[in-house]
Every structure is written in structure tokens, then in C-alpha cells.
Length: 76
Image (cartoon, rainbow, N blue to C red; front, side, top):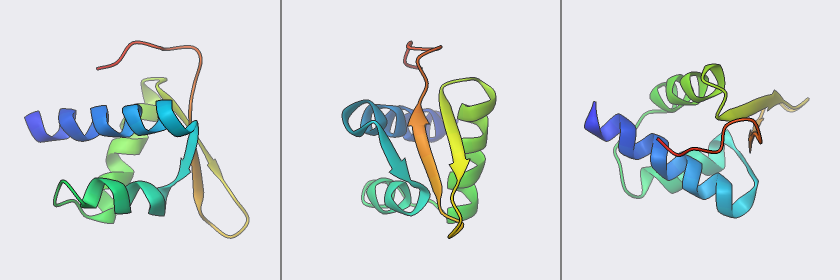
């Protein structure tokens, strides 16, 4: 559970700096510090989207763009 929170925090911090990222980019960045599968990353992104922290958009080449939403600014 603690690792999951740290990964969520890392994602939100990265998006705060960059504004947006692809799922593959996030996997590469997060993978440098944590051992995480693509499936687990997608689960974390889905949780963050459901909670309103991010917005995930599907592009035509099937990459996701992840953007920080303005509605929830608090960090986990």
C-alpha cells in the first residue's frame, strides 16, 4: 500500500512539472525507481482518474495522454 501511494505521488509530481505525459513515458519514469508492470500502472492511473486527480485521453495510436486536472489540486 505504501509503495502504491509513493507511485501515485511520483506520477502527480511529474505531471505537475510537465502538464501531460503518455502512459509509456510514465512507465519509463516510474520504472526507474519502482518495479511496476504496465498493468499495475494502468490500475493506478485508473484510480487517479476516478478520484479526479488526472484525466486520461485515448489517442488514435492507442497511447494515453495523462493530464493533471484543475479540479483537485491536493497531493495525496
